[in-house]
Image (cartoon, rainbow, N blue to C red; front, side):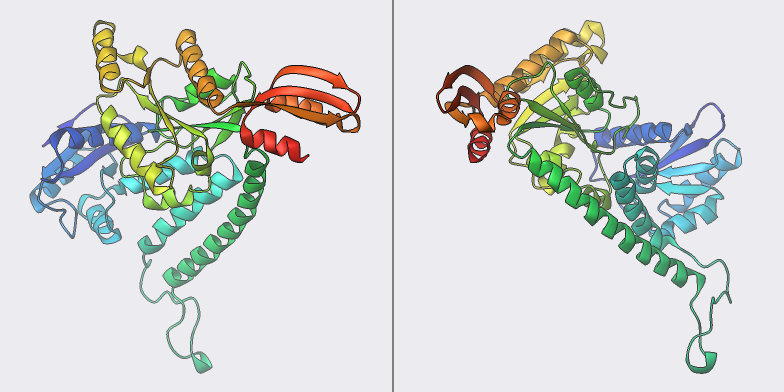
Length: 420
């Protein structure tokens, strides 16, 4: 089937094959997600062309009949781009472009372009560029015959290096250069993480556009970038929970996940996602207003398992309850609480809800705290500020050889302060 909508500029048609092993709800949700990805890229979706098949056509992804329908749809001038809701092979993309006379982007290309536009830090830009180059390399094609760059062999005989071969070599060299740059940046990140290894850390994880950055702003007062777009955040930021607790709790906002997230991106962003792996607690944020929220849960759990964070303690947070229609909100909230009794159901825009989450985070980290005394000689009083920052000071008294602090703090923090 296909549908047409309002004509506009920067227009795209969505294309998807519905295979028997994918249920109707999942197929519909995936197509709706591709529509939102297109919107994030600034493309207006003017139609959708879908086909039920047991498998993708090996040559053009779509079967011949549906290919003709798509060709006619594009010939009417309703769009100039085709977005495919799967990762397709380079030959399928080329054949589809030739058949319909339009630019073809598969789901992976769309996601990579969004990451490329949103990456800000050196590390994020390098990570995205590596994956984009790896994606591009097998898709390079000759621009025509007889285009050798140089003669090869003894005496200049033999075929030389073609445009494609040269471009692929440049890509390999660029990837090696970026990998070396990332290794250097990763050493800096490891040093930063080592400095806070014994601090209380919570990482906000979850599906893209679940409201993690809005929650980050509400919990820390930071100026985290917030937009109603997929992958508005593609790098990790770390801020202190406010009002500050003792000990301090650090909150990390991480890159969002999505169904069919390119494996290369997951692998490339593993160092960034190390914040989640090394956190003491994961606040798993889910969009409560999304009908596919259980699918969001499953996708996030799968990615966390991929990066080795499956066993990190988790607090389930159903966000955006304010987006559920008022007449259905109470029933929907009750259903979520019945299904997940330990979860928080909230809105990041509601101060009372944010305060409840703040209290839940503080309570989690208070469970592991121990009470003990730290004795600091008078000539080591520079530690005083660190003690007050890292621990809750219950009592302070002066003795002949120094100050004694009765503190409550995390065991690792107390061991570190004692070692000073």
